[in-house]
Length: 458
Image 1: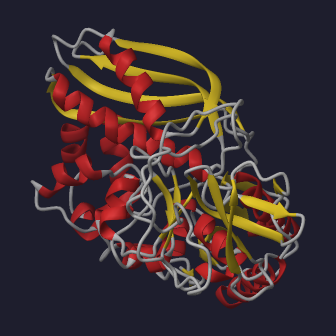
Image 2: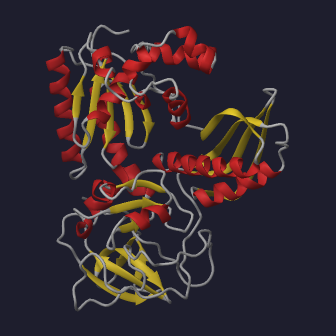
Image 3: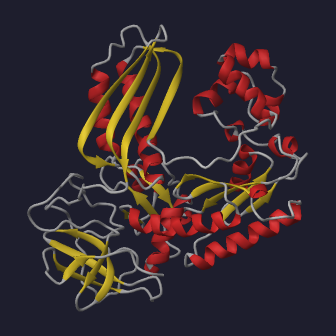
């Protein structure tokens, strides 16, 4: 363990949604959900305004629509816009230290002891982090970040979550155990819903409760590796170094069952959850994947994997789930599965998928997000909870396909973004990061004056 609080964990606040609100003035202060917008889509990021209503990352979009009020904007991710802002943030981190471990497009660890920072006291690292957060806000047009600084990676990450958004928590050396003690056991790496539920049967709710358990008891319940890890982490023993890692080659999620599962309906429900979690993690990296894999561990610990490679990369939870279901159909589960996992690989930063909407969509009424009374009625506004997205893999041919949130440009009206589309029309709000909330106009979907544009400058 380090003797100084010299590991910083930085997490950009509600990153995807924050970028959308920065680039789209009419959405500032309003609930925004970014992710899959189809009936089986998954929320990648919800703005803090949307979280008030219960929307959250990895939630099915359909559930988020039910929870959020009319006027909530549901937008398809703009990977290029997020990567552009992410690169600026990561460059600032590399100015602070040569050792930066980027976890995702909006999250990284920094080894402060490896940089030019000479004052590693609590006050010294706090001042450096405040300066970094201010630099990020200025360089990205107002994006905010939260940071945690501690003697280990686990504590630094926990610290960055404690006072979000725009929070900064420094955990001084020697204060690790008292910081951990009152927190939920869910803050410990490796404790998911099922492990937490199992611990609850033993009266363990907080880290303090977990600290009172003996290693032998945890090993007998969870096995040598997992039980031993929980014993160490509950006592803040985490000596992992910050390392410069290669770009991720795969993303996955898996679940180990308390008892072997033979019921396919239970396995299908778990597969749905795993596909959503995998899609959410994929979205967090602003990436798409071509190969989908399932892992099934049998009752005798033998492990089988099945994979399928798609024609085009995808980030859609529904597509991942469909393939995973087909793959699971080929696995014998009659003796029960101990573990089930879903993973994706063959990652890329672009997808050839296109979105289109059902030609029989209803018009929105009333208009969401306070559109001007004299504006033309959008066919499928970004906030219309009744729109019915069609297939998410429409490629080439026919009229152009537009999706909510997409950057566009019009030869007469300038830059804007797609508010909605349908019935052969596309509705655009013309505004940008430095403008006032803009006017809304509707065009024919194949209007030659309208084209896809690059993300705006802020």
